[in-house]
Image (cartoon, rainbow, N blue to C red; front, side):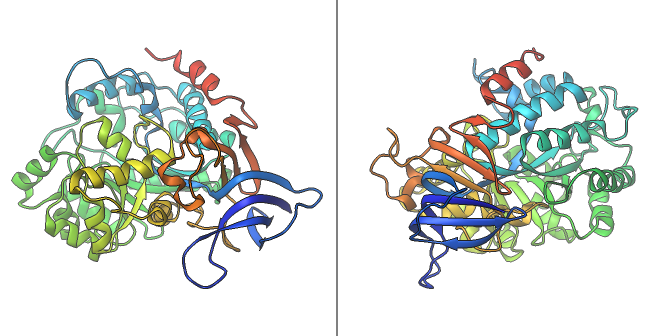
Length: 451
């Protein structure tokens, strides 16, 4: 058993109001990494780990490309757009080996943990050697990521990604060769083999496998039909959707419908789908995603960094979609910045404040990712029976002083996260990973291997 005493904690309402509340002097007890008791108005007991400040459920990162962390601070000279940035990304992808990727991913995952994330969905497509040939060790890249997650203590949903085309009607380019498989059936076979390998060697609550379609640009329509018919029904499915207007136009010209419409045509638009970005949608797309009860993963800091645009988050939520948050290319790794940027984008686009309440933003940063993940996810408030994944926030920093606990989404940053607990284990304290040390040091050492 582990136990924690929280100066203040965001817990499920004790008065039946349905809204989270900030309670003082909360003791938490956990068995096997799950919260078994929540006791407000208490004093700490011998053996309790004291968590000062305001304790929230830890955040869930619903979209990550770990190797994109290489690009932070290196792609900002001169003008350009997403497509120019993509060429720089391909250069970084070409330098990855299993050993280099494991070291980099350990550092990136450690940064996530220290920032308040306890789980991550890794959208992974760098499967093979540079020429597209498999590594001699089966699943070498995938197992490197799984080991990295275990080293950092973060829960990993490893999204094995189908990537067959360089664009609609175009073969993979030489830069994309290592992303692809021979065909959709080879990918399905490799996915099944990977699931078995991960299940054999890693605990299911820490590392599990999901599936992803890179985009409608990268998966031809005939292969979407095969995925719809043969993908196992017990794993999450992700896709980059309508991130760029050019993607929509190409899809309309080739298939006579939008990317969302194409997914619906083949029965892939369901409540297990996580549509990432969804920046450029038609009103019909928004209605379809909402009616399907799909999850839409917004990555506000990346979408701003890449000049993608402001997605219709409020409209999607109102239509019935679940909003989740991710850090994608890791322009920043900070759940509080993602929450705030989501709302600020809405304000800039609408001319109105309060498009999302603080509680809705916390929901998007936590339980919103529930269906996106194959590992457990914390809810928006601490509850008995949920995983003991916590982050403590300093309410008296230069940034947060004077903030009400439930409005810290509008003032806090990852720099204010003073403690992170995953599965009942304290894994970060004041920005330092308890197992691995300072994430900045880890990142500096890992990034020296890349040009």
